[in-house]
Every structure is written in C-alpha cells, then in structure tokens.
Length: 137
Image (cartoon, rainbow, N blue to C red; front, side, top):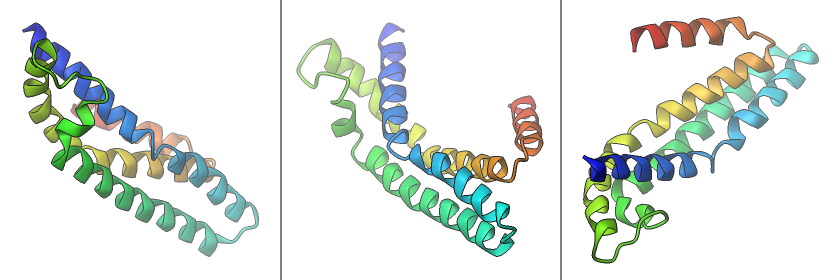
C-alpha cells in the first residue's frame, strides 16, 4: 500500500530527526572517556560513562514521550495536516511512530555504550555485539 509506505517514511524521518537532537551524546562521550583513561583515572572514566548513559536515558525518555504522546504534532514537520493525501498518510504514520518511539531509549543507550568503548580504544567489543545482534535479527 503506497500510503503505508509513505507513512513509514515520514515516521522514520521524524524519529531520526529527533534522535539526532541527542546525537551529540556519543560524540562527546568517547573523547571524555579517552581523556580520563589517558590520565589513567579509571574512576573518572567510569563516571563519564555513567554520566553519558544517564543523560542518554533522560533524553531518550523525553524524546520517547514527545514521539509517543504527540506524534501528530511531530509528524506535521514532514506531512501536511490538511485534508487529502497528507491526512490519510498521517493516519497510518501516527501508530507507526508511536511504536517506533519505543526504540529511542535503546538506540541512545547503545550509541553511548559504543562511544564508551571507542573512548577505551576498544572497537572489537562493539563489533562483536553488532555482529551477534544482527545475526539474531
């Protein structure tokens, strides 16, 4: 169904637009962890990882609420809310975005976790995790 495909595209665009509002988190986590471990301060490195994970969960929760509770308002960024095809696509996109929103916290948690490993100069562990999860998927 073309309307369902259009709805999925619109909902995914909104999800990733909101996700990228928090994309700074993994970007800053890796160098902060690397800096702490470069000074051989393992406690500070652990704190930086915990801070990144905490912030990822907080932002993920806020964005989950935004996408799950106000999907129509978010979808108006990419869809017309007037009568016509945009409105019909909106009706398909709203439930999809609500379900897709449940992935916000795990996506930020995963990205921040991978960044922490990059900060430790360990790229093999995230590779193994990605390999296993993709095989299971």
